[in-house]
Length: 110
Image 1 (cartoon, helix red, strand yellow):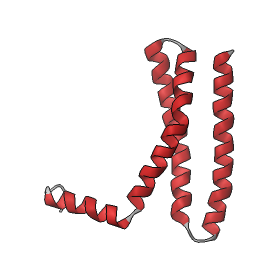
Image 2: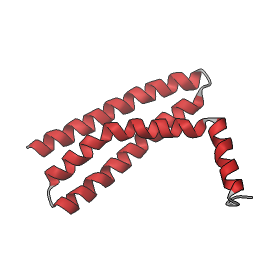
Image 3: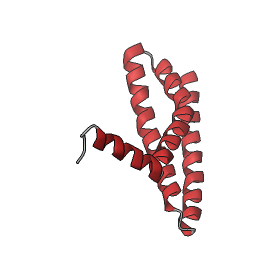
Image 4: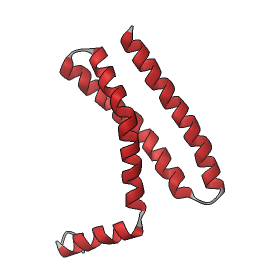
């Protein structure tokens, strides 16, 4: 019963966040700020895929569906914010220039 509640909560939370982000993305696209809309959409789709992966791996490692669902539901929120922050950092031109300088310095990229 506990696992069903956790799973239902996670699914409902994901649907609610997706709905908010779609509405937010439409508003942003209408105002020509596409990069935030793309980052938010990528964050949500990646989070769904990654949470499913975490659930399956946790289930196999622990042998418990409840433990797998608990672990997956705990990491949903934190990793969504971490991914979004990571995605936004990569959008910054100064960060991209820094990365290219490092790659060129170490001769990893021509």
